[in-house]
Image 1 (tube, rainbow, N blue to C red):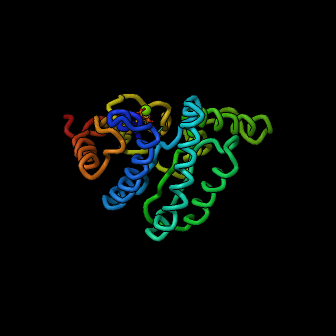
Image 2 (cartoon, rainbow, N blue to C red; image 1 turned 120 degrees about the vertical axis):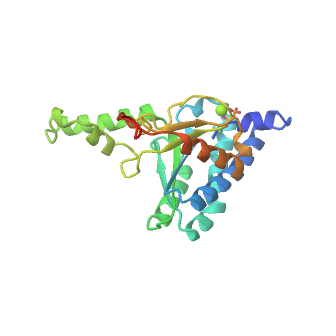
Length: 227
Ligand code: IPE
Ligand code: MG
């Protein structure tokens, strides 16, 4: 979800207004994904690197997360959405950890769309944490070094019970991954849209899906039409 600040700047509004409108785009995205039969939707809500923004903007983003959970959790739950949170929880303010846990606990048994909230998330940090977990197992003599495999490492990531993404979509025209699911997106299709996140809606979603539908996924193998 990129482009909130630019959306606001183009209108001479404070950045927080872009973030507020970004929350409305989140509501649309959840609804559109559910409608389209998407099973897992992961939203990059706050990156491990976003702490470098001005303190006021960080506070605004934290406030918006709390506001979103307070306002939308009931509706999400009624619609069968299951919320999962990935990212580093240690070091987050207690009230933020509280709302994240509340959302996960309430919706744990739901069977509709899984909404994965990447909050205080960084892919490299996630891989390092997983490596540390396995290293501790090895040090304790419970795991042999040769058993540190792709599968074991995957199972030690925050996303252990979440499938790899088929499609990674970034708005605002930037063509970067910015530490979003680097391990999990090894074979994902990447789609970059020029639209700013607050403008995300049915049209942009359709564009992304149409682009995805044109791709030929090979996973390192040969294409279906290869002789
Ligand atoms: C994304 O929009 C919002 C998040 C950090 C969640 P930005 O704030 O990065 O907007 P730009 O890139 O400044 O336009
Ligand atoms: Mg940005």
